[in-house]
Length: 154
View 1: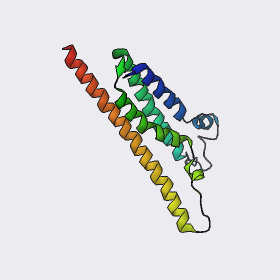
View 2: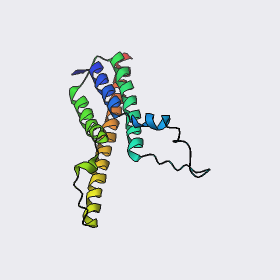
View 3: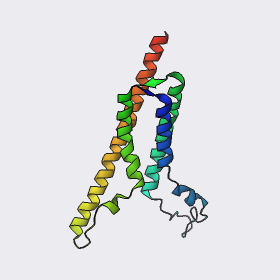
View 4: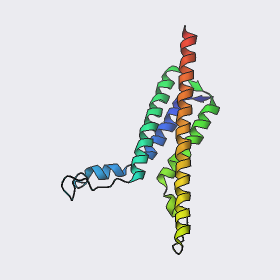
């Protein structure tokens, strides 16, 4: 068993790690909302920024529900928490790393470059899928816990 406050603190820490701090620079930059061509927004927001923002929002919601859970329950099963954490951490770590720097690119052959880019994309897709599976499992666990609590109270 693990204390729910510990789980809340861990997921709050993960959500602060994954927060895309670069968005603050973009919002302060006055040129962010302006366009070179009138009527067109030519500013391109990086996909990593949007991905990290979505993960941050999801982890913030999960942290809120861990906090809410800490108000009603003192402990949760360690196995379920470890599974949730193990499915979440890789996506948080990769969100802060640039996988393209870790994969050596061979600039002499375009087919090899494409296959290496595909590897990075597949790794990101797999880790994002695992991240969302972890969050879905948390919601299933949370809903079952709330249902059993309602049945016990009746």
